[in-house]
Image (cartoon, rainbow, N blue to C red; front, side, top):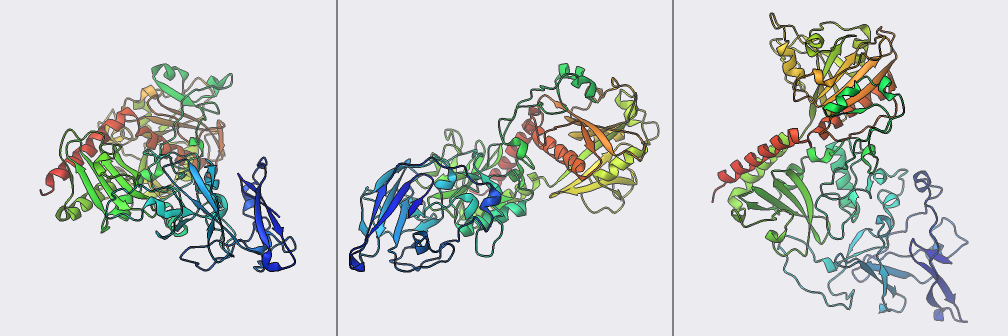
Amino acid sequence: MTTQNDYLHYETIHESTTEPSTQKTHFKQTPIPKPAAPPPPSILLSPKHRAPPPPLSPRVNGLNDVQQPSWVNDPSTDSVHNLDSKPIIEKKIEFKRNVDTIHREELHKDDGVLHLQSPQIIQRPRSFSDTYGKLKEVPNTFNVSTEKKKKKKKFGIFGKKEEDIIISDPEGFSITISMRPGSSSNPLSRFDGKSEKALYPLNPPLPLLNKRYVSSEKEYFDLIDEIEKEQLFFDEWSSPVVPNEKWEMNYSNGWEKKSLVTTSCIEDGYYIEIEEGACTTNTDLKDYLIVDITSDFNYFNKFVKGNPDAEHYILTEEPTALSIIPATHNGFRRGIVMNKKGEIRCLLPNELEKVKEFKVAFPDLSHGDFYKLSKQNKEKFENEIARIEIMNSISHYKFGILYCQSGQSNEDQMFGNTEGCPAFYKFLDLLGNKIELHGFNKYRGGLDVSSGSTGIYSYFTEYLSYEIMFHVSTLLPEQPGDLQRVEKKRHIGNDVVVIIFKEQGNNWQDQFNPKCLTSQFNHIFIVVQPEINTKDNMGYFITVCCKSSVSPFPPFMTTTHYSHDEKTREFILRKAINGERTAMFSTAFKGNATKTRKKQLSLLFESLED
């Protein structure tokens, strides 16, 4: 029978004499066939097309042996495990991170002694599914290579050396992770992160667990636990590079008349998104549910705080801190770099002899003091970093909703509206729930929940793991003598994202101009116009506009018209959340955040005892 993986093709030839005991097995390498197109995921996950998993074999000589069941070589058995007369060939691969090859050795077990045949040097495939499998440990007494290993000094808190690791025959991410008996689905297959890159990558890099479909911290940490349980060999820890696209605005002819935003604002430094063609599509950014979602997860609190094996290193001048804990993967350590840029997670290779040589964390040690944190300061340091992490993580949002009557063109007119059309309140009911502010015990978005100074009612909703409060202009109270509506502007003027509900009119040139809002904080405008202004309205026209410092953000628009349904609600909420998250990378917000983090670390380092 012919056995095949993605890159090699072997023929197993059984030669039998009159006595069964003299049966021999040889291997002959044949030309590599062109790989067939992989079946769709639904086929891979179907019990009809999925081969039964190989049974676990007993431990032999201290090794986790992976047996080849006889049904592989016996065409008469299709789906029954029949382990009998065929000799078992054990195949093991030694994985070495500091070279770009894999040594493959064939071991025959029937002779009573493990005879080592000549190793074949095979170029290591680049695809994840053919490279990485489940980790297995090899006793130090077993000579897996004739190459002399260079001994290096390692940190005492970290595990086995890299040469003590081998991996079994790769089984592939999409069919390995959770294919246990009785399992009809693979909950982790959609998180295969082949396209993601680590912010601080290893060399050569490990594939990342992608973040495209992650919706909450609990979900992702559960994935990490599942991966550790399965001992899958890839990077679920490192901070990823956030995908980035460029604005293009290559629209069809006549798009200016369909836009709810005047095109004159482009000259003033704004971009308009109205349909397909708004930006490039060179990355997987369009597939992300929430942009850079793991930056809000409390990794330090869960994995580092209180960990007896955690070590902390500090550079006072920058300031910079590096916390290191043992990882589940032999040969790597988990690290969290904390500096003015924020928390950046990374894997440290085991070849690293000195922490100060980790240049990605400490590029310049010529200024300031560098030292390892003492035990007496460890608890204080961990508690304060944990507090800062929670304070900087985002679990809620506040968005402004400004009502614009037909023909209104300046902010004083818009903020002066105290009532809206029936279609407006139907739209509000689509986005969230009307709540009474007095005594409200969830995220209040800066509104008064005790004395009623910011009104009696507002709108609130929850989406994924976020709480969202809306600042509705018509529900914020008018202040006597406040002709400029300063109190209303105090809330909506400090919102990064503002939803403009523009009444339906008869003139297409009655368009919204973002320049009419003078707040420097407003960066993104989602302009919504109903088909009709009555309560019978069942659809909306939408145009999105943002300042030029904000990069494109998902979900990207494919049409100008949206129905009054749950999909439209999700589109608007995702667009608002990702818009604000992307705006935080712009120069207007990034500088202030950098200064705040630097000050927090400096104060902490000054408070630590010598």
